[in-house]
Image (cartoon, rainbow, N blue to C red; front, side):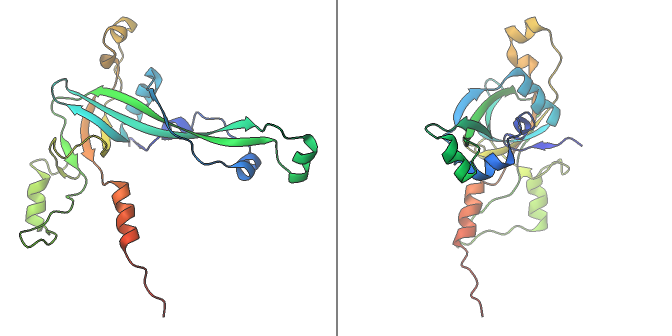
Length: 217
């Protein structure tokens, strides 16, 4: 079974393991994310995983490409400045601080012509009375489309807006010559075979916060 790659998971395995004492004593808050373009190795990795969760940047029918970003966080050790040996020994500190580095890695891949657009949930729609619409089993089956084996429900380009969270299914990266890869990098990258809209995690958090806590007896 091909695994789902969540934000930055493929980078975690490549990072050095930091001393547990340093992490416990000197943990720092994440810094502002930096941006960079994915490397050829990272394209190969997402193709090996097969499915990645990411943030959609663009889906262009004209060029047949999709752009998306994956966010990764990793800790780095930094030496403390202006700290004497005696003061370090008193606090039991290792003389280092941990900085959490965040980065957004940008990807661009070709989309296969028959790639379906899906959404994991139907979302909240309102009827003529202003109430949240409920769907019958028959309506849900119709909204799944002709191929009922696909996950979720049919989606359109209008559903997939920039900034949306998506699950992208990919083929493995093809084996091409170095010359071909240099002339057309897209030919050396995995192709997208399905894009599925995911629920916005921020919306889920807001809904959870809006639910009043139960009173204790």
